[in-house]
Amino acid sequence: MGVQQKKVAVHDLEVGMFVSDLDRPWHQTPFPIQGFHIRSQDDIRALVSHCKWVMIDVAEIRESRSVKGNSKPVFGRAAARRGGREQLQLPPLSIREPVTYETVTTLKKEIKTSKRLLDDVEDALGQLFNTLRSEGVPDLRPIATITSKMVSSVIRQPDALLWLSRTRAHDSYLYRHALNTAVWALVCGRHLGLNEGLLNHLGLGCLLSQVGKTSLPADMLAREGQLSAEEYTTYRGYINRGVAMLQDSGLSRAVLSVVQCHRERHNGSGFPEGIRGDRIPLLAKVAGISEFFESLIAPRKHSEPLTPAKAVTLLYEMRNIEFQEDLVEKFIQAIGIYPTGSLVELTDGQRGIVVSHSPERRLWPRVMVMTDTEARPLKTAKIIDLARYNEERDAAEAVQIRECLPHGTEGMDPAMYDVTGVESRWGLGRLING
Image (cartoon, rainbow, N blue to C red):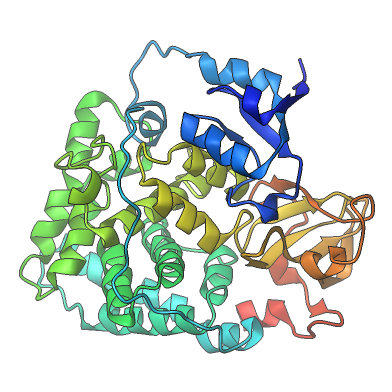
């Protein structure tokens, strides 16, 4: 049965309803995503202060109130999404002396500058992990130097490393996971206004957060999201093993806290200690939400990935449950509703990949279009800035994003295209592979 929509006055809203549309454009409200479940009276009060009526999805109400059983417990990522629904409210995040960063270079130039950086990161991680597997003494200087270069790149232009990390092939899941987690975290940390020193601690902590997994059996890692209770107990030990491996390496307490606490959760449902709320260090909170988001959109092969848009929606549903509410909102603001590297289909049928986004126009990013309206591949791709394109058009003429497409959708390989158009003329395929 299809989803039915119903128009409801905001004063008649109830907890559990799913808000699918508003009486005004979403970007004119503080809600970071389009479409969400009402979980509390605070959500209703926020809607009352901005709207007179909303559209609700009737079928979504039923789904949110139903509980699906599972006869055999399975531990890992899936269990983390289902369990632990206790909510915890904290005062808003407060960043001491936040830094306002300006984008000082173009995406094109920053990709040229940083295109070899990710190869260097994987090489350094590979050497580090091999040393740890052989129980040698790790030399962290190369990876610290590379972290500093990553931070500088994200400060100059926050989309370039995201683009490169999302559109390139990786030889190792473990390296890719650590690397992409670090990039998401740095983009979020930049948006929060963390100073350069803290960004370096955050990035290095994320890159090192997976080192404890080098001591786990390969078959267990391959089933990381679907483990038995006994296996999950063993798996959880990777955190303390990683800290032990790095304890005498001269790392700062801030970096070690990221390694130690990136799997702790806001409501105490995480591990290894089950600490909660403001007992979790800020950098570890940022690392935790970044690592979780990466695991949703790029899990191991046995698990079905979520599209970035669906992962953003899931994160929003977890605010003040597994992740602090205002940190969830800041993370979404930083990466966008449709993050850089997301494959999308437009309302006119064209398909492409998100190149960058604007916080002021969350639903209208810049898209590199790779197919025509019949989903036939173009000989030459083009960039469309949806915010600029739709600025002077009425709703009937505007081009929107219809949906996010799964990673790997046939005919959607950005490395095969040169980008042309009035906004930019540069060979993206050559920049990625050259």
